Image 1 (cartoon, rainbow, N blue to C red):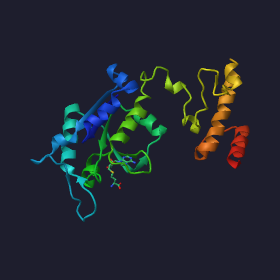
Image 2: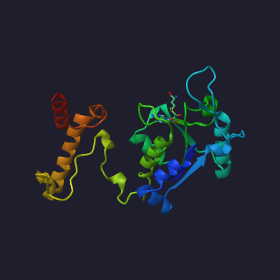
Image 3: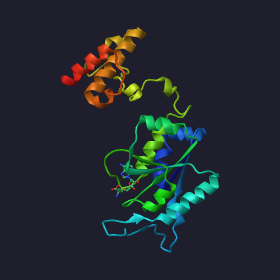
Image 4: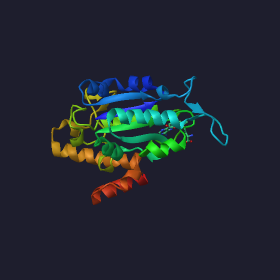
Length: 243
Ligand code: SAM
């Protein structure tokens, strides 16, 4: 899968994405990540890409033309018009289902805003998706883009060693993942739950499912509205939420 990240801070995104699992997947050719510097398309001698907002107000705004030129150069070079995700606190909140949907694309472009954002007119022309990573305001779209690239990349076949689609993970089935333990068997006087040492797969599955329901009821009861629970699990969840 190919990612193109239009940004004023290419080093920031590339440094952050060139390590660990994502960096290895890039080296293996499973992913390609390219940061495109919007400043290369500045059209004045000061190399600036921002200006004051009409109507007044605090801060500066990224201008339409450098962003548009950057996008045009990209689409001409790759010969296609990819989906363009504008990272914005005003977008739809990113979640695992969105990551799954984006992971089926062959390529994706991200547009990172900075300062007070980007001139609305260029957004209207090039953006296909507005995505927020949460209800707070950051200084730029670089960290959100990196978060999205990370979450989407790990769903691309081969990026993780195990087949992630076959594994249970948080948000699958609208439940959070159960607690996990590794060696040693006892740590700080805390023992690994007996059932996990039993080798009895059916009991382990049953225990994990129950723990997922308990954990979700405690931490994210909102998710349970869409989860498919058995009558027993519904009673369990209700009891936990009332505690
Ligand atoms: N003035 C904008 C507003 O109130 O909606 C906020 C601009 S913010 C300071 C600068 C840039 O950071 C945005 O253009 C966007 O690209 C990025 N950004 C900030 N918070 C974000 C969030 N929660 N999710 C995604 N991108 C965000």
